[in-house]
Image (tube, rainbow, N blue to C red; front, side, top):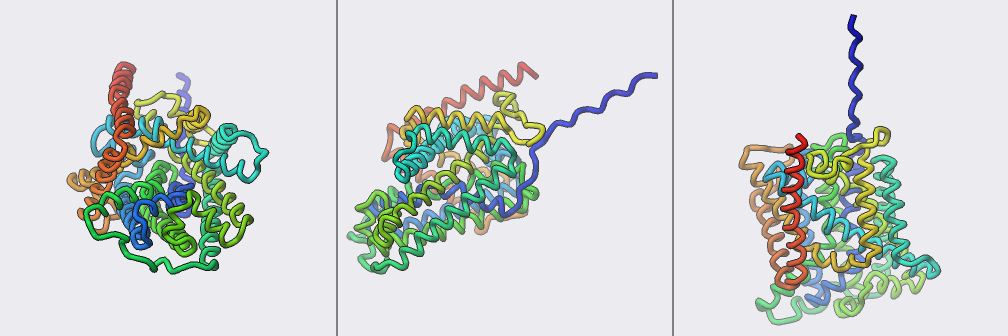
Length: 445
């Protein structure tokens, strides 16, 4: 009698261990880094009056909310691991999705994380001057958080969630201190500060770039779609709730900066949060906000290391990246190799010191992918595919988001042509890379 065949060994899958609260904290954690503590002064220098400063942050918030609506519907249509990568792959072509993942790994995610890690190290040394050098501290933070995320998605999400709560506490403390301090009403002063003219348009456009940079990051929560217990239900809710919550926090910070410093004082400082706290609470207040910024940057890094490796994992599972990157640890059920790859590459960029140059290429490349993802919703709708969540006001709100993205790309290319050309060159370099991987996949099939 023939021996029975052994039962096949089950292949591990991503563990669905995250709920709605985790997803909301991931959305907010992907947005709130160091930008809100720094960028208000950049906006103030561009437009100059309280009305226009707040107007830029409100407009940026509306663009981010329109984007959250678009991504919420896409999440309900395609609740797949990799989020934006999967949306682009199914709407257009695997090559488009590959180029997105390529740029994410080489430019936007890794370069951004390296810069934020250096910011974290800088504030640590401000608090403890005897601490090791910035590159060492940045690398330590990146590798330490990578190790935590290798323990499992629950461990990574718990650490990220705790850091998000702590940085929210820091922002609320800044707002409360500013409201208690003596200052003028943000509504005081001229509305425009200049004669109405077309010259206001490029000024407002330039102000929107740092605003949208500060609002960016909500889309990365969708990368962990394969680890949500109810992705079709929870991710759309998390995107809308999370982005709306951040808009409230950001507007509160700007109101307080204007109340304490005024538009002129805000434009005159390069560290508005520290200046506000120093003015209302002395050096102890400045030290406390430095702690808050350090925690905020660490939380941003934690979110990035948790989410982005899922894109590289999805690429590997599609046969478009190294097969080992698609390996899941049988115990923790997380893509350990992809996590280590992300942490190491960001650490190498931080150690090399070239993160500032890379950051100059991020905006144009990032908003190209945003615009394409907005167009993907039109593709799915044309096919008759519908999700449980529907974008309010579609197609107008979706068109508003897409047009805003293209305008940011155009403004960035116009203002920084050399940096934008390099960013676009890195993006286009993904095309021959995709052809190589596609040929490799076909030959091994």
